[in-house]
Length: 279
Length: 113
Image (cartoon, rainbow over all chains, first blue to last red; front, side, top):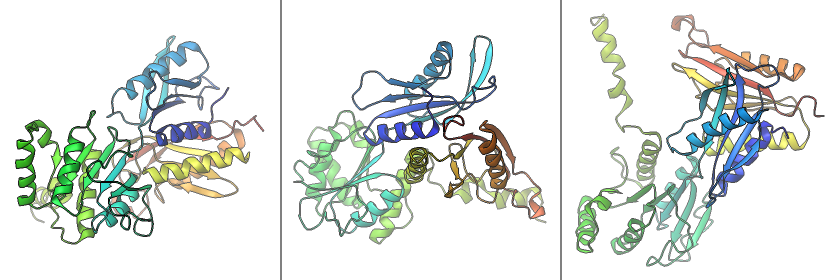
């Protein structure tokens, strides 16, 4: 069966929305006539032991080489989409490889002032957004029109109905220090650990939390994983500004940025004036 | 490409397939230098519905659309290289500073329907 671009798009979307990973290749160059445009995909549903293969490139040896490339991409979360060169039976060929991970989730614990713009900007950035609160009138559709899930749960066990995984980003913004702490302990004890744990709070409040964590016997290594106070230093004051600051931190972690203003990093003006001697 | 962009394009692809419409998909497969869109950006050329997504806006998209028309005719995929390294002071739209390779392919098998 020939797998079309539409078939592959459907497979990748379906698998990642369900919490699985997937990779696909298409022949894009260096190949004999008839091969460019042929596709193959591997899907790994959540919890599956081995990937499932779809489509094919035209021969067993080609499929084996493509499968090896896809398996390699799926074994490293830093893998990027792009060209891969393979050589099969003395023939050089170029594949374009796509790799897709389970959809990234943003779990906002506490449905107050900061949570609202946070859910909004989180959705904008492609996160599947969940908002949790213990009060029935807060995690509502009216207040969170673009959240994927709204959950009423007690803060003593906030994640009971929220399956967390390595691509979950947890943001603790409850109305009380005590609630943030309870949720933090649960988040820290998760195995495997979530991608991100952020907790709002002033320096003083964060410090008080760490004192408590140490008393509880939590390791320094675990405490170092907490992003608190949350966000990048852009001088945020309003809930909207705080959401932008946290969003900037999430993007920075996703893309491996530095958080430094690009102006200072690239120094275009400085280099220009140095080169031209200020002319 | 954001999850929403990716989803919108994937859904448009699937809708075109299900409706049996012959379309063309353009995907940036490699870039060098500074390009407006990066590897993985996609554009669907649907003769009945127009364009979904973008591979670079004014910067070189015309060349891709031209290729898409050929691919629609022949059913044979093409590899297009778009060079955006025109002189900065020329005021041409292609001054972003990079080069990108785009794979342009028919979406439904040409001999399928």
